[in-house]
Length: 196
Image (cartoon, rainbow, N blue to C red; front, side, top):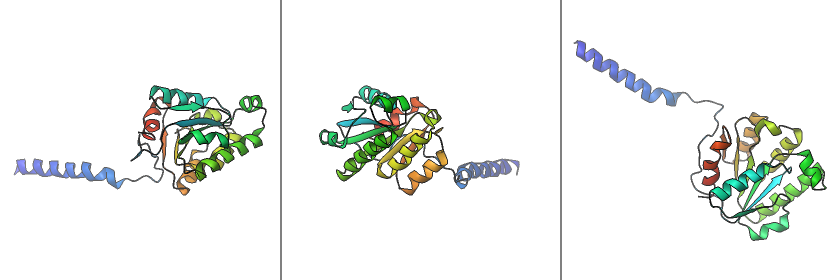
């Protein structure tokens, strides 16, 4: 009888280990899947910035490492889209960056929204990226994010972004797939999956 008890205990433990994790669903689920079910973006790619922060140069560098064809134009306008198949916008407000363009925040936001509207009208995939996390947690970055999300095809960001819950609600309410990563080293896989 003793060996039957051991077998029954093993079965109960195996059953528990198999089914228990699926019973625990978190209401604060964060998509950490490294890739999309199918690629959305096509080459060539226009890389630009909303807020004139330097983070877009990181994305352009990733694209070069992944052998993706594209150009980095930090001050791209809607009229620049004719040559491209996908728009990638890194969102992060830098006061110095905007001042160096001869614009103010309102003009930069208008340029960004005009660019997004034109890309949407052309049925162009739009990848929004916020990779500075809380380092660019200023109000202007938040405004740019919230006004840009409705145009996105996919959102990629850091888990430690400012006002994360508000952003996830906005992204989810617009039915936009998203991936949040822990750090920049984890960014290449979901970035690559947008194109391949």
